[in-house]
Structure formats: structure tokens, C-alpha cells
Image (tube, rainbow, N blue to C red; front, side, top):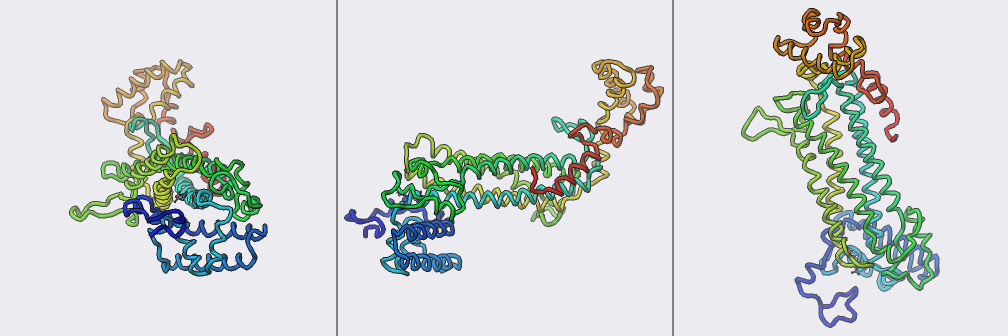
Length: 461
Ligand code: ARG
């Protein structure tokens, strides 16, 4: 049997293998709501321009609404023989309203139809992701406010470096996510142009009004070049690039959480809601959600790579290759949204172990820089010399197995005679973080202020 939607000039139908490689209905059915919205806008415009009659429009709208309900309620029968979501819907429309259905495809092609659908879909996905990111920022900022003065070791090279506050660490991620949201909002701006009306590739001789469908579908303007309209996929690449960067950010926090909740670190406790047990080791509490979030960049960067390589070197305009843009895009956007939601849940429930964090901050001579700074400011010696003196004091503390703050004044003076007892004010981790009041520094006053700002303007940048 030839394809009943386009098989006019064909004597026979496709081979089974051809049908299988050609069909996209198993994945592009996800576009049904966008496809119906696009078709309704197109039909309304055709009627307004007197290209189809008001009666045709009414029948088409009623039919499309019914199809939407059928799909939403699982009653719709998808047919692989009809290839894709566009032909499945149009064919059902014909069953429902008869020959009038055939008028819907006037001045349109599946080439502009499909990419209108995908633009609408990606736009919705970006809005969903942005809302998720705003919620995650709130969860992080709330932890930051609560733990503005909770001291933990700050790391470089995963070695204790200087004390910081837990809140400051949380807010670092709020900043990253803010830039992610900026990238998504940029991508959204550029993708929000209407390709509908480009038809197959060259535009159409019908007197269509592309500004009307643009307005109806919430686009900012019609795309200016019909060849570009049907063949551009850079909005997908841009969104997947933003998704990749965002997934990388989430994976860094996920990795920290995995490390922090290990029994070697015990920095934080995760709730039962975001951990699993082991079927063999009863004592275990595994951070599966964090590990899965850590894994997501694999498939999300993979999606970017897959679409980029699919697009590379494609001549204008539409090529069937482009059908392969959908599965990776859907998969990446779904998984990113899920990872964001899981991270927000995990962060909300997470409990820092204050005592462990403080003890860790105290080990590793994390206030050595504070000592060196004190020497510079009070003994007026160059920083390089102060660094050397401090190194010798650290070595002495190491030898005596004590904290810097536990050395006696005589111990200190045996290395640098000018040191006075005032030095002890800067050697505690509390004093260290409190002194970091420079713009963007970790001092609790800064952290509290920044957290409050984020909590007040969750939509803010
Ligand atoms: N299923 C196709 C896609 O996903 C729709 C466009 C098909 N156009 C065509 N001329 N065969 O891109």
C-alpha cells in the first residue's frame, strides 16, 4: 500500500525496513501539543486570509481539540505506517472531519511544521528548567542563610586551604546557576522566532499572514529567510550547550555531596528521601541521587555532540538527517530538569555536621595565611618573608602536634621575636572567616547579606 498522505506518485509502499528507518512517531509523539497548537494557529490564519472558509476552520479546530483529548487520555492509536506525529494527527483529523482536513496543510509543509513544533517545545522546556533552577537557587540560599556562620574547610587541590563558611560554599553554586539561567534566557530570546510559513523551503504563493501566527504562538517575529527557517537547528545546539554547562555545574555539587557524606568525611547528612540502602550491607546509606546527577553530563553533553555532528556539513535546506535532532534533545532536556529537581530536594534536606566541619577546618593549619597576613600588617615585613616565618611556625606546631592557636607566645617568639600576644586573635577559624570581609569574601556578614538578597529576589540575576 502506498502512503496515503503523500503516496500519489508511488506505485508501491515502502519496504518494511524503509518504514522502520523512516518512522519517527515513537519519539516525536512528544510534540503533539505543540503540533496541535501550531496547526490551530495556522488554520486560524488561513481562514482570516480567506484561504480556507470559516466552516473549514471550525471543523479543523473542533477536530484538533478532540485529537488532543484523545492523545492526553491515551485513546489515540499511533500508527508507525504514518511516519510521524504530523501525519498521524492529520490522518486522524480526516477520519473525524472528512475532506476538510486536507485544507489544513495549505501553504505549509512538514518542514516548517516540525521545526515550529520543536521551537515551541524547547521554549517550554527552557521555561520549565528556569523555574527549576530558581527553586534550586532558593534551596541553596536558604541553606546559606541558615549556615552563614557555619565554618568548614575551604579546599584547593582537595587539600584544606583556608576556613570558609558553609553558606559561602552554597552561594558559589547559586552564582553558577544564575549564569546558567542567563544562558538559557539568551538561548530563549534567539529561538523565539517563527519559522511557520516558510513552507517547504521557498515560502508560498498564498497570501498568508506570518505576523498573525507569530503573535498567536507567542513568537517575537517571523523568521526572515525561508531557507534558514526550515534548516536552522542552532537554537537546539545553543540550548544543549547551556544544558551541558548547567549539568556540569550540577555534577560538581553532586560530587561534593558524594564526598561530604562519605564516612571518611561526614561533613553532611543526607535525608532518607534522597539515599538508598544496600541489599547486602545493612549499614550503608548510598547517595544514589547525587551519583546519578554526577552522571548526567554524559548523556547531556552526548546530546550536544550528537546533534552537532548530525548538523555538520548539511546543505540547505531541510534534510531528513534532521529528524535525528529530537531524541537526544528530548532526553537531555528531560534529564536536566529531573537532575535539577533532585538536586533541589537533596539540598533542602541536607544537614551539615557542624562539629565535624569545624574540626576539619581546624586541622591542616588552615589559618596559616591569617598568621602570615598578621605578620605583614603588624611587623611590616614583606609577604614573602612572612610566608617563610609562618612556614617555620607551622612546622613547630606540627612537631608539637598542636593547633597554631595552641602554641605559646614564647614558641612564636622563638621564631620571630616581634610577635605579640595580639596574634592569637587571628589564629582561630572564627576570627579567620570573620576577617574575610572583602567584597565577595566568606565573612558571615557578607554571606548573610548575600543570602538574604537571593531569597528576596529569587528571579534576580
Ligand atoms: N519527521 C520529520 C522530522 O522530524 C518531519 C519533516 C519531514 N519532512 C519531509 N519532507 N520528509 O524532521
